[in-house]
Image (tube, rainbow over all chains, first blue to last red):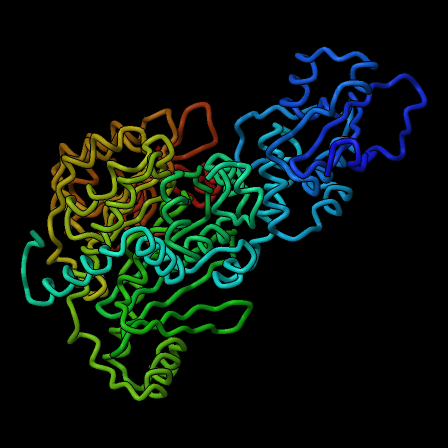
Length: 201
Length: 394
């Protein structure tokens, strides 16, 4: 899809720019374009520094191509910008090093993060990449909360993790695919061990 | 794996960068971390290597026998969970109570000790405790002794009954308890294992009250160097198999206990108790603590004078001080402490000392079990009570 034909998503639908507010345009790696207010961008340290360094005027924002965010897909970026718009103007929490942090998940955030776990992990990745401190806090908390009262088998399903056996099998398969001799060497080693040989060499 | 590659496919918890993983794990509760360690090896290694700040839990107590271990963990106050690890013919049975229901799992072809050690590893790596009783053989041994001595009473011991039923159900012959490995060997193995866990922690292990049943001070030294001395308030050391000799009547065969290695580590610890051992250190050693309990083979008159001079007229309040000897000579006591304040009866023999400018009193009790107890009575009205009862207040 070309940039010109790409749909433009107004994340801050409630606040149509009546007054003179600057709206930046960003593009995800799957060519989806987003318009995000200047104030919302301040929630992301990475984007805030980027737009400051670019020094765009209102005309530049409209005339120049959208700022590309290569690493994040449209689905994830939409969630990120929705979060930023909702929390624009809020103070960015400072990490005081306390553990565990007392983090409350607001209703809006809880609804926003009511998504499949794979997408939630992508959201965390994106929050980390764009350095959005509070989004990272709430999303990490959400992931941690998901573990409460779960057995190891349930945790495996929730966090999309392999069991030790599956992990071993996958590693072996990968190793074999890389080096077909590996299996033979391993079998030879096992055989020698069975015969009572002390050293493989 | 690069970020764009990750984001292009399905991601799992393990694909998170280390810093984020750590951040997520910091929000996990203690129980969730323990469960998470069991999910897969990679995650277990990550948790162990990331050295998360430990949480402070109430208490952990471990009771050890040759083929069973009972662990009681109190994550929140007054809510203890008891977990039983027992060896059976083809594996290990783990039993615990969850929401008032008994949960039981059989883990085939594994040793009960290995299963317990795996759990202990997770616990001691990620938690500090207000109270740690390790290993505490007393209760279990008492049950076993009771079972062996009074086989008819076993029905009262719920766990034993359930375990036996369980073994029967699985058609497994249960060998007599004492024919298995030496419980002291199991205990020593657990102490060594605990030492290795504590050694591998990035931070010193924090515990306020440490109780250990040990054979000698070397056992204590396996744990003590890894304990944060600033938080340690109380150390109680008990002879490890005293329960076999149940009561004071058999105390005459008590072993000596050396403290030379431990004492330098206890400089900031206010309370010490050495039970069912005869201490070999001089009495002065114990006068420096706020609370102490020790048994001596004998105390000379000079020793009693030291006790009196240090404790009776001390302005800094002592809470209690117990010394026990084979037999106190009343003549010596009278010479040192003066005439007794009462003439026996309900209160035993005691000497009562008023503290100038205070309503507190220091009381020296001569107990019938040959324990000399020195205690500061700070409760309101004790001094006038003693006066009213006609006691001499020195």
